[in-house]
Image (cartoon, rainbow, N blue to C red; front, side, top):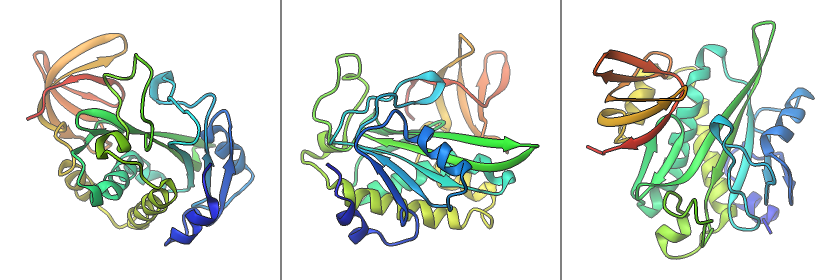
Length: 257
């Protein structure tokens, strides 16, 4: 079980000061959405020890066993013109929290965290707009921390930090470190240029530039060479038919530089 007191003993910033914890829940994003509509403060965190309906992108489910990993959602209210920064700020925060262990980590567009080429974590951003005004944004994060084995269908593509490191990590401290990194980057969001964000992400990703990729988009597989991000976070790909920009999709194959 997650030790809330231990987490607060490690917490260094305000994110997570209000931590709402569930032993089991359907989805932390769903619970956080209800709380955000009631007006909770920015930086409120909803954390679950396990999820029964954990969500990934594109209607995918997120494998969410109890007692081993991190599944949480942070409530934020960014300026609407900085909304497209969020998945990248979240990904960078995870990568920075991983730095002490010197993992072979990689940011995979748009919001996966890879270690040794396998998925160790992911980010799901959801927003609420009313009358064209942003009410709140939810940053949902799942990290495979201490899972020792995965279902057969995930074993070839998923990894946990414990598997990569050869020993278990303290979830409470890792969450505190990750939230502090997120708070620091998010605190700079109004002053950071998009070029700065792209440069930070580019240094953490082998995929954004000069990478031969196959992208599944709207039921089709597109092939090409990546050429960075556009001004709104779309992935620029040089395809045989010309330049295309993808704002959604799934990279199903990528040969690293």
